[in-house]
Structures are given as C-alpha cells and as structure tokens.
Length: 340
Image 1 (cartoon, rainbow, N blue to C red):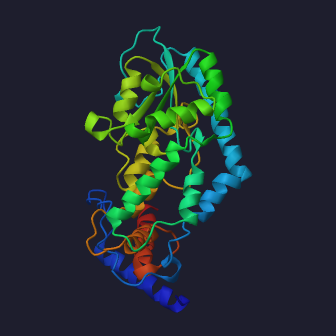
Image 2 (cartoon, one colour):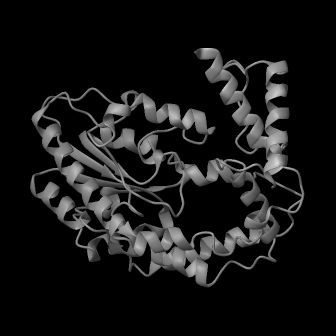
Image 3 (tube, one colour):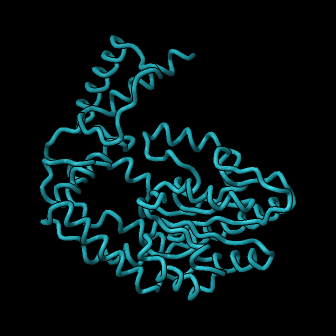
C-alpha cells in the first residue's frame, strides 16, 4: 500500500478513535474464532499459498544451533529446579489450584510432555511439508487423513531424543525422582509411545503408570490439569517441562490477552520450576490465532487453510490489511497520550 494511503488510513483511524473514546477493559473480548472482521475476499499476496507455511519452523527446529542451545539451556534450568525442589519441602511445581496436601516425606516427581519436549517429532512435520494433505478434500476428511498419518508416525517409534533430554531424565531418575510423561497422544498410541521412550533410553518403570495419555471419555481431556493433579495427589512435583502453555496450566484456549495474563500470573516460575522448550512448528498459540470452528463456507481443506491464514494474519504487527491495524495503532497512541 502506498504511503499516502497508509497515512490517510491512520489519520482516519485517529479521528475515529477520538470520537469513539478509548476502549475500556470492561468490553467483552472477541471470541477466539470470531471472523466477523475478516472479509471473505482474496487474501493479500503473502497469504495466498499455505503449502510451505511450516518450512522455516521445521528447518530451524532440526538444524539451528540456536535450537540446540535453547534445549540444553532448558534442561540445565530443569536440573537447577530439581536441586531447589529437593532442598525445599514447601516447593511444588504444580499450579496453585492443582496442588494437594502431602506428607513431608512424599515421593518426588517430574512431569514432562513428550513431543518437542523430550522427543523430536519434527520429521512428521517435515513429511507434511513434502507430502501435503490433499487440498481438495473436505476439511473433516483432511483432518482424518492427518490423524491417520500421525498415528502411523507414532507406530514407528522412531522419534529421537532431543539434545539434553536423556542425560537430564536419567540423572533425575538416578536421584530417586519419578518421571511422569503427560502427553496428548491417545490411548491407542500408548504402547508405541512407551516403546519409543525406551528406545530413547528414557527412564520408564511402568508404561501403564508413568505415561498418561489423552482419553476425553475417560476424564483425561486435551487440557492436562486432571492428569497433573493425579500425579500431584501422591507425589511432590519439583519441575514441569513442556513446549506448550497447556503443559503447565489449564484455561489456555482463550484470547491472546488472557493467555498473556496466565503467563504473567506465574512470572517467577518460568525457568525456576517451569521449563518451556522451543517449538515454533505448532501449538495452542497457533490454534488460538487461526481457529475457525465450523466454517460451512469453506467446503475444502484448501479453502479452510486459506481462511485460517487470514485469521492468523490479522494478528501480525506492522501490517495494514483492511485498515484494521491502523485503527488498533490509533487506539494505542490515544491510550498512551491519555496516560501521560
């Protein structure tokens, strides 16, 4: 967009903001999948082809020394958390509302996620790039195909340990700390998952007890709080490791501001007793930005993906699609001026 047009939009947005007044915190937040301000029009050029969206993220995860460094940093911090937790009987790494009263001599535990926390599942994401889901399929059939391919990947039990994971978990187990793997892999993927953990030389005294998979019908939903509480009812948890906000807290499928608030509520815990591992490839952050719910006007997977990209795109800073971002900026400027 030409600078003159951008300037005109910003001036108009400032005028609108001045007339309307600053938005207050009492306004109801938009639903996560509210697409009312995304017109059903041809997307800007950069949003037209979603085929290789994940290329940079997967390459970074697989090849970047920075990724390796962050993982090693995470496991170093996890080791420090374990040492602090062992020394302090009051230490508990579960969210405050998930903690149970425990005896002073309760056994110690670590809770960890699996994919992109201790096991590297990026080859599956690389395969999706090389062999994309058929864009002509209806969305429900495309998702079924995706799930079938994921189950096939899990069944191979070939995911490799991430840098630092094996040494950290084996040392923790050597110190008498029990490891619990809480994953959103499904029950029918459990045995192959346990096989993979053993191949990776991770401590796993019992597949049945120490790997807590997802089963919505059995009270083990996508949000992991009930499974964390199960561990915390018998063990004092000294560290939690994950790559997704939901590995640490419930209530994460909310607007960006609410998610940021959850992080702030536990600001002192990050890197202290909660260890977040890097994963730019996928996660709840992406679902929140690009949730579509049921969109009957996107009859194919390709159209569904394009709409999802528009939903994500409106969250980018520094863009002016449909003039929305200029209006947001005008509100920010007005709010800042009003606070001086």
